[in-house]
Image (spheres, rainbow, N blue to C red):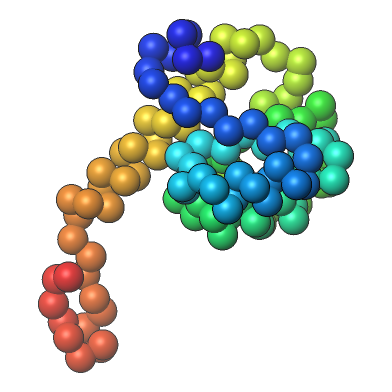
Length: 129
């Protein structure tokens, strides 16, 4: 994937609950998260909620064999789910989705740095922060 995207990426791949705990403890916040809905014991909404606490600004991609009520529940609970990739799909499609997510994440981060936050007038401050 690194070769196809032509960018330097660090990948953290977890497949068990123990690996998830270690990754969330050792790693800084993620920019993009690819979540396989059907990974035993770590997939689904509870894992997504843990990731949201660890990496609140990350863009999220969900890999699913089919869009069912579990996937729908994840979409409704997290507005940062950018795309659902319904398998099987090509490596090219996955690379494009990751590239889109990286661009969106970087644009959001840049906007947060350059656009001033305005406090409401009724807060008593009425100033740009």
